Image 1 (cartoon, one colour):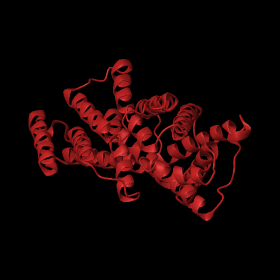
Image 2: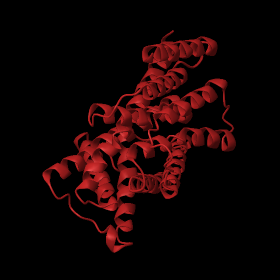
Image 3: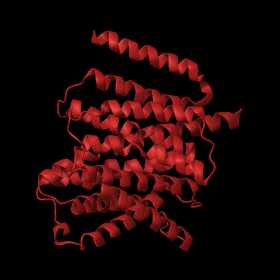
Length: 319
């Protein structure tokens, strides 16, 4: 009985952390776009995001008197993770210059599909009906969140950048899940961000347009600190815990809350219109997350019936 209770607590911890990781990561545009508006380039935005995050984690580790020692094998794995994080972040933030941040956040969600495919192809993870149903529900919901103007095609460079970001992030999640590293989440995240920051520093020397610049105002410093804390430190720490507790694929699917967060920010912060299309999309996304969270606790037929009822109520509310 004690083991069962402990297992349930661990699962709940992983689920909560997965949800928090998605919500925190979904606030990226809230910090990046104001910095772009003040003339800060992409490499500088990301460098200060990760440098501030690295300092925060370093202070926490020192305050708790944690060892910084790592083995050569661990350092190799963390170097790989840091490089993937740098590539994913650069391509994602660059895409903001080619399309709306909300659309980029929406397209980014193809990474759970990539995680599921990688795990099934290379690690023979069983793809269950629940997983497939969750992915389908989430993707349909994400599609409904898209609010582009009729007849306007998405910029293909922007789409390409987001797809690369999705792939590198998916590989990052899989490596975290499959690696043999056994160290504290804080320590792992610290080294990943430190290596990521080093990669971004090197990238800034590749072009005069990418030179590092200080945030030009107190407001800009606030958003730089926001990026360092919320979508970086908190998101990565929560994500790492979730991957270890509930697995890579469930954690990725719970990432459906990332674009949902972007929509909520748009409505609550920027006064965007909350439409029926958004309402139905949100219902489907939350249903996908609920389905993967509940797992075998509920029958698929029962959950499907509930989703259908919610959608019908939404349509009746419209009429």
